[in-house]
Length: 436
Image (cartoon, rainbow, N blue to C red; front, side, top):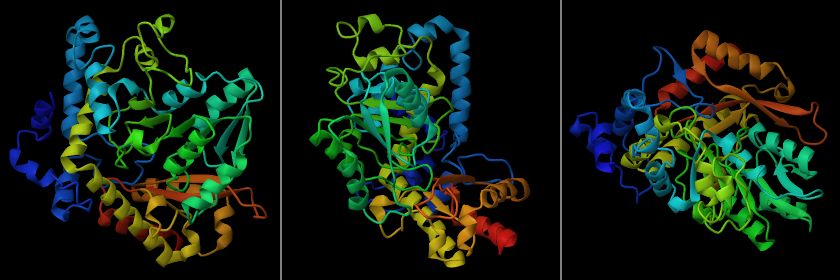
């Protein structure tokens, strides 16, 4: 199956394949011609500069055609597709195996989900919390995590403890100290993002998860911006649960994602399947991962294409992808600092590579109070898309104590594998035109 997918991904043009093969051992950005060839395999509206993979990625043109073919296959024989097709069937055995290989995890520990939100809810609402249990999160978490935690607090009486993360952070130790100080005998879970959606801070996942293991506390990682951006080895991270999206940096179809459950067969944290057709058979017939996968008719075509995207990225080289994305993000941050001063950048410095990601957050102004203006950045983001056809987005997060306003507002730029320095040039030309 992998070989046939690779033939399809080459689109019949075998000569293109050498341009897409990277020496992953080198972990260096690929030659420019490789990225130019890769860029040509995506289709955007004419004149559009797309710098918002942090919200949605873009399915490659050939995979878009393949998705259409799979929908046709499903429609032609629906029951066969749901119960018998290797690509489309209900338990998703083949596609789970491929996705597990991509993140270096056992297939038995992987569930294909519809998005990060589903995976996070499966864990938060499936853990056996009781009144007074404490869950540690940061003040940069996305609503996909805070929403099910709110439900759990109302239903079970848990206490959600929010810790403040500095922006920009300067070291992993600085962040780990915040979590260590928040631990108490009542701590029952640590939940945090791999890459913060607000500033692009890459959290020290291994260190935080080691802290959790030391205190026998499960760790849940919101990996919405991990899959496709970072060369992931999920077991090596040491987390107990990792929920992520297939439709962002991996450029898979909408309504695709992945949930990793450490040791799903033994289910050490006693997770229950809140969305399942076979919950009553948990244990004797189905593991927790198998039970969560059995949710009725699956998004078979989308899940098969998500598995195909793993082949697409392996042809490039996952370490080369990560290096390329980090390199482009470093260029964005450097340009912002050179134009409006280093203080305008709220993402970690590119010099601190272990905290850096493909998300760059900055305020395009030398006026330090512009960050606290609730209208300045959001209106600028609207102007960029409506006037200049450049997609970015605005984000906000809590201000430090003593700030002139409760929240900081930044422009967030996502640089994916289909972007190049010309996109960055166009962005900064538009910004200087609008704000100077």
